Length: 108
Length: 122
Image (cartoon, rainbow over all chains, first blue to last red; front, side, top):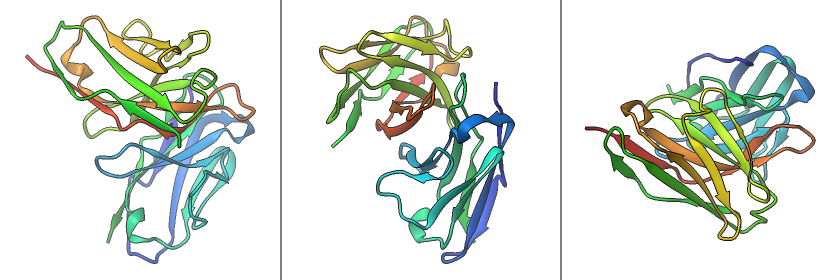
């Protein structure tokens, strides 16, 4: 099983600041089959990024994904008030599909 | 518009059975995988399994194999998740989500249902 470790657990930032979230895999995520999701309290997760760097439909360009093999990053270039949420990465290179433990981005 | 609409919240006792549902609309339900994801209170996301409605091909996470049954009825565009004997530890929010696999053998999830809260308590 591929274990995904997200860091930091919590990121305290102010609106307008840049957020950098890390997702590290215990084995290589081949072909960059990694996705990122955003989840707000009381809501279902929402797909942000797939294949490591491709934005899903309707996702603002302040969200970007990068990385390969075992190290991946989600960057939010300038935090908007609606971006404060929990973010999860997920690998789909092999079964079982696994998610990281999440990074909470909170208002400082 | 793609929509996945899940059945309502359930409160059950340990040992009872339960079947929750997820109805898809706005896309080809038959030829898209539907996955199930568990989220225990205050915790992260866990993949349970996935079903292909056209032929009912089902893949389970080893963690959930034998614990739940996933199925689909393509004639009415509904996927199901069921338990035969619930435990308190099954208390969680359960999400269905459409699986996508542009080139990969496995899936990420691009549209999600609103979730079904299952509470198991004596």
